Image (cartoon, rainbow, N blue to C red; front, side):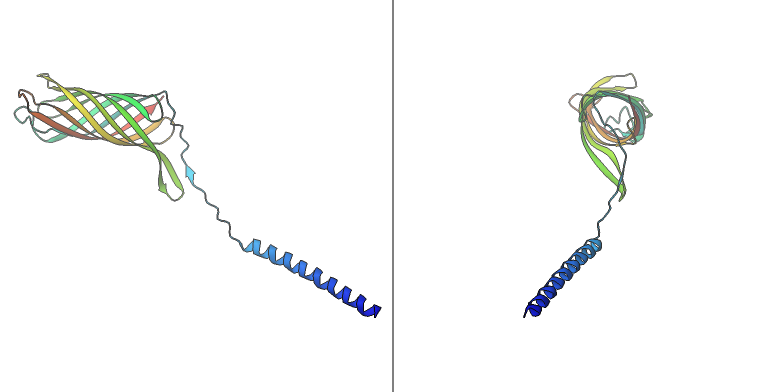
Length: 201
Protein backbone atom coordinates (compact mmCIF):
# COMPACT_ATOMS: atom_id res chain seq x y z
CA UNK A 1 0.00 0.00 0.00
CA UNK A 2 2.83 2.30 0.82
CA UNK A 3 4.51 1.51 -2.49
CA UNK A 4 1.29 2.31 -4.41
CA UNK A 5 0.91 5.69 -2.73
CA UNK A 6 4.56 6.45 -3.33
CA UNK A 7 4.28 5.45 -6.98
CA UNK A 8 1.15 7.60 -7.49
CA UNK A 9 2.86 10.59 -5.88
CA UNK A 10 5.92 10.17 -8.07
CA UNK A 11 3.75 9.84 -11.19
CA UNK A 12 1.76 12.98 -10.37
CA UNK A 13 4.97 14.93 -9.74
CA UNK A 14 6.40 13.83 -13.11
CA UNK A 15 3.17 14.80 -14.93
CA UNK A 16 3.07 18.22 -13.27
CA UNK A 17 6.73 18.87 -14.11
CA UNK A 18 6.32 17.79 -17.73
CA UNK A 19 3.17 19.96 -18.09
CA UNK A 20 5.03 23.02 -16.81
CA UNK A 21 7.92 22.41 -19.22
CA UNK A 22 5.53 22.01 -22.16
CA UNK A 23 3.65 25.18 -21.20
CA UNK A 24 6.91 27.11 -21.03
CA UNK A 25 8.04 25.73 -24.40
CA UNK A 26 4.66 26.62 -25.99
CA UNK A 27 4.85 30.13 -24.52
CA UNK A 28 8.35 30.64 -25.94
CA UNK A 29 7.28 29.29 -29.34
CA UNK A 30 4.19 31.55 -29.43
CA UNK A 31 6.28 34.60 -28.54
CA UNK A 32 8.68 33.73 -31.35
CA UNK A 33 5.80 33.38 -33.81
CA UNK A 34 4.56 36.94 -33.14
CA UNK A 35 5.69 39.29 -35.91
CA UNK A 36 6.69 42.70 -34.60
CA UNK A 37 6.56 45.26 -37.46
CA UNK A 38 9.53 47.64 -37.72
CA UNK A 39 8.34 50.89 -39.24
CA UNK A 40 10.89 53.55 -40.11
CA UNK A 41 10.55 56.81 -42.04
CA UNK A 42 13.27 59.25 -42.96
CA UNK A 43 12.26 62.77 -41.95
CA UNK A 44 13.79 66.11 -42.90
CA UNK A 45 14.48 67.57 -39.44
CA UNK A 46 13.57 71.24 -39.72
CA UNK A 47 13.28 73.75 -36.91
CA UNK A 48 10.55 76.11 -38.16
CA UNK A 49 11.14 78.54 -35.31
CA UNK A 50 9.98 82.10 -34.84
CA UNK A 51 12.09 85.25 -35.09
CA UNK A 52 13.37 84.28 -38.52
CA UNK A 53 13.89 86.59 -41.46
CA UNK A 54 13.14 85.25 -44.94
CA UNK A 55 14.49 86.65 -48.21
CA UNK A 56 13.72 85.24 -51.62
CA UNK A 57 13.22 85.64 -55.33
CA UNK A 58 10.36 84.46 -57.53
CA UNK A 59 9.12 84.36 -61.09
CA UNK A 60 6.01 83.38 -63.00
CA UNK A 61 3.14 84.92 -64.92
CA UNK A 62 0.73 87.80 -64.23
CA UNK A 63 -2.58 88.25 -66.01
CA UNK A 64 -4.03 91.76 -66.39
CA UNK A 65 -7.81 92.00 -66.31
CA UNK A 66 -9.38 95.09 -67.90
CA UNK A 67 -7.41 98.28 -68.55
CA UNK A 68 -7.18 97.22 -72.18
CA UNK A 69 -6.86 100.85 -73.23
CA UNK A 70 -3.51 101.05 -71.47
CA UNK A 71 -2.22 97.51 -70.90
CA UNK A 72 -2.67 94.38 -73.02
CA UNK A 73 -4.96 91.88 -71.27
CA UNK A 74 -2.62 88.94 -71.50
CA UNK A 75 -0.50 86.82 -69.20
CA UNK A 76 3.09 88.01 -69.26
CA UNK A 77 6.18 87.19 -67.25
CA UNK A 78 6.64 88.64 -63.79
CA UNK A 79 9.77 88.53 -61.61
CA UNK A 80 10.39 89.90 -58.16
CA UNK A 81 11.87 89.68 -54.69
CA UNK A 82 10.45 89.50 -51.19
CA UNK A 83 11.51 89.85 -47.57
CA UNK A 84 9.56 88.55 -44.59
CA UNK A 85 9.70 88.21 -40.84
CA UNK A 86 8.21 85.28 -38.89
CA UNK A 87 6.86 86.27 -35.46
CA UNK A 88 5.91 82.68 -34.63
CA UNK A 89 5.80 79.37 -36.49
CA UNK A 90 2.42 80.41 -37.85
CA UNK A 91 2.30 84.21 -38.10
CA UNK A 92 4.48 86.29 -40.46
CA UNK A 93 4.63 89.55 -42.40
CA UNK A 94 6.07 90.02 -45.86
CA UNK A 95 6.90 92.80 -48.32
CA UNK A 96 7.45 92.20 -52.04
CA UNK A 97 8.48 94.00 -55.20
CA UNK A 98 7.73 92.67 -58.69
CA UNK A 99 7.70 93.90 -62.28
CA UNK A 100 6.09 92.61 -65.49
CA UNK A 101 6.99 92.85 -69.19
CA UNK A 102 3.58 93.90 -70.52
CA UNK A 103 3.45 96.54 -73.27
CA UNK A 104 3.18 99.03 -70.40
CA UNK A 105 5.35 97.78 -67.58
CA UNK A 106 3.53 97.14 -64.31
CA UNK A 107 5.39 97.47 -61.02
CA UNK A 108 3.83 96.06 -57.86
CA UNK A 109 4.74 96.96 -54.27
CA UNK A 110 2.91 94.90 -51.65
CA UNK A 111 2.87 94.23 -47.89
CA UNK A 112 0.88 91.32 -46.47
CA UNK A 113 0.15 89.51 -43.23
CA UNK A 114 0.34 85.73 -43.51
CA UNK A 115 -0.59 82.63 -41.55
CA UNK A 116 1.05 79.19 -41.86
CA UNK A 117 -0.66 75.84 -41.37
CA UNK A 118 2.29 73.54 -40.68
CA UNK A 119 2.19 69.91 -41.79
CA UNK A 120 4.26 66.92 -42.88
CA UNK A 121 4.09 65.91 -46.53
CA UNK A 122 4.82 62.25 -47.24
CA UNK A 123 6.88 62.09 -50.41
CA UNK A 124 7.20 58.30 -50.30
CA UNK A 125 6.33 55.60 -47.75
CA UNK A 126 9.71 56.13 -46.11
CA UNK A 127 10.32 59.86 -46.58
CA UNK A 128 8.50 63.01 -45.48
CA UNK A 129 9.23 66.75 -45.48
CA UNK A 130 8.17 69.76 -43.42
CA UNK A 131 5.71 71.87 -45.39
CA UNK A 132 3.13 74.58 -44.83
CA UNK A 133 -0.02 75.81 -46.48
CA UNK A 134 -0.32 79.57 -45.96
CA UNK A 135 -2.71 82.43 -46.66
CA UNK A 136 -1.91 86.14 -47.03
CA UNK A 137 -3.91 89.38 -46.95
CA UNK A 138 -2.67 92.91 -47.37
CA UNK A 139 -2.37 96.01 -49.54
CA UNK A 140 -0.02 97.72 -51.93
CA UNK A 141 0.52 99.92 -54.97
CA UNK A 142 0.30 99.02 -58.67
CA UNK A 143 2.30 101.42 -60.85
CA UNK A 144 1.31 101.62 -64.54
CA UNK A 145 4.58 102.41 -66.28
CA UNK A 146 4.98 105.58 -64.25
CA UNK A 147 1.60 106.95 -65.44
CA UNK A 148 -0.37 106.32 -62.26
CA UNK A 149 -0.14 104.62 -58.86
CA UNK A 150 -3.25 102.67 -57.90
CA UNK A 151 -3.95 101.55 -54.37
CA UNK A 152 -4.32 97.77 -54.45
CA UNK A 153 -5.87 95.11 -52.27
CA UNK A 154 -3.88 91.86 -52.14
CA UNK A 155 -4.91 88.35 -51.10
CA UNK A 156 -3.67 84.88 -51.88
CA UNK A 157 -2.44 81.48 -50.80
CA UNK A 158 0.68 79.41 -51.18
CA UNK A 159 2.52 76.20 -50.39
CA UNK A 160 6.01 76.07 -48.86
CA UNK A 161 8.44 73.13 -48.79
CA UNK A 162 11.37 73.30 -46.35
CA UNK A 163 14.52 71.59 -47.62
CA UNK A 164 16.29 72.30 -44.31
CA UNK A 165 16.42 75.03 -41.66
CA UNK A 166 17.65 77.63 -44.15
CA UNK A 167 16.25 76.94 -47.63
CA UNK A 168 12.72 76.58 -48.94
CA UNK A 169 10.74 76.48 -52.16
CA UNK A 170 7.25 78.00 -52.42
CA UNK A 171 4.40 78.27 -54.87
CA UNK A 172 2.13 81.35 -54.65
CA UNK A 173 -1.19 82.38 -56.20
CA UNK A 174 -2.27 85.98 -55.58
CA UNK A 175 -5.04 88.33 -56.62
CA UNK A 176 -4.79 92.13 -56.92
CA UNK A 177 -7.84 94.41 -56.95
CA UNK A 178 -7.50 98.10 -57.84
CA UNK A 179 -9.26 100.88 -59.67
CA UNK A 180 -8.63 100.92 -63.40
CA UNK A 181 -6.24 103.54 -64.64
CA UNK A 182 -8.14 106.57 -65.98
CA UNK A 183 -11.57 105.19 -65.03
CA UNK A 184 -13.56 105.91 -61.89
CA UNK A 185 -15.63 103.19 -60.22
CA UNK A 186 -14.20 100.53 -62.55
CA UNK A 187 -11.90 97.91 -61.12
CA UNK A 188 -9.34 95.44 -62.36
CA UNK A 189 -8.73 92.02 -60.89
CA UNK A 190 -5.21 90.86 -61.77
CA UNK A 191 -3.80 87.47 -60.80
CA UNK A 192 -0.36 85.92 -60.76
CA UNK A 193 1.15 82.50 -60.19
CA UNK A 194 4.79 82.31 -59.14
CA UNK A 195 7.45 79.85 -58.04
CA UNK A 196 10.10 81.10 -55.65
CA UNK A 197 13.07 80.15 -53.48
CA UNK A 198 13.86 81.62 -50.10
CA UNK A 199 16.63 81.73 -47.48
CA UNK A 200 15.93 81.91 -43.74
CA UNK A 201 18.34 83.50 -41.27
